Length: 468
Image (cartoon, rainbow, N blue to C red; front, side):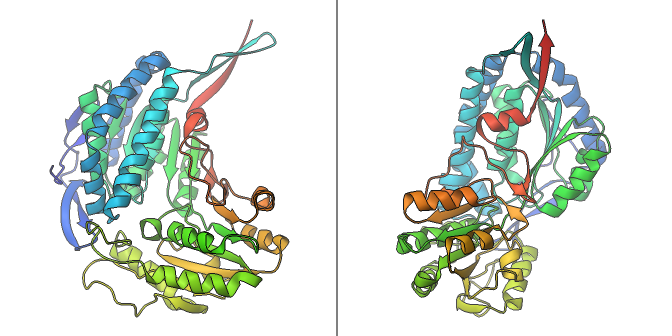
């Protein structure tokens, strides 16, 4: 397996970029260069969009069941690379091995399998009075994906778009682009028709901007920061193109006074620190009933202190590095500026001498209006906030411009009642497991639209009424 990639994938072929420049891909654990990928250009995007446009009519005209057969072959080819996927993400992102195998490799395979199965069982066409209601593909999709779950976020878009009958131009993050090549190796092997799926690597300001503003792109599906999502929306608005956005989060984990506090805190800390805190759905605000507050703070500090930091390929490692020096500096800036009570981690905690590591850090007595409680930090930093009543908890939880995820712990009926009041796209009650086939997306500045399952498929479809 090589980490030196010098080609783009356009029109069913591996082709050189129009530019000789390349992008270094760093190993964030060692700070060494892992490999290179092409620094694509707007001209490369033009070629990829042309290939996707040329392939669209044929792919859209194929039955959904036939598209499902292609996805089935793609799943088999990608599943054969599961070990390489986990290893690659461990190297270019620093995700600990066990999580890389279960989440970074396992989750996208589950999602892809789901879309292959969904395509094999298309929803029957609906009749409303004298109208036949049909669902047709949007067209050419530009998919722009982030670095924190570099294959899952690609598959969540690509598999749904392909099942719907769309063709795709993908730009993966320049920080973690290598695992996307494994998907395209699998697509080539599986015989995905030429032009249906295209890859252009490069930077956001060049390739991402060219995709977002391209007149030949009918829809842009983006996952990343709210600021970039805003810029993409403006670019797409000029031509009234559809956008689907999965953006930032500042999710609250609400622990009521009748909760199993030990379980709620341990699961909550694990959720906040998953992938070194580089998770948009991370429960980075822990809201605790005042009568259980001291107990929760003590347990959260102890739990965070037990997390081993280091080499992601060491089985004892619980927390790997952040993705880059810039991300580390950004996270440490939040820690340095914090005015709350530090109870674990912080700037002086011992860490490996090399690598972009930040210690698992917990602050207590956090002001709900402070930077710590309002800004998406995207690192292993947890804020703990007390509340006095269920109404108080809901008010604090909803005091955010984001609304992506959250958790509630307590007696089942009471916890469900609180969950219903949270202005967020997903809520786990008493540790309910993530469902990769349920709708995923946010309220407010956490995004527009939904991914996963039938809801994700619908994002890539137009609805038509035919009167008879």
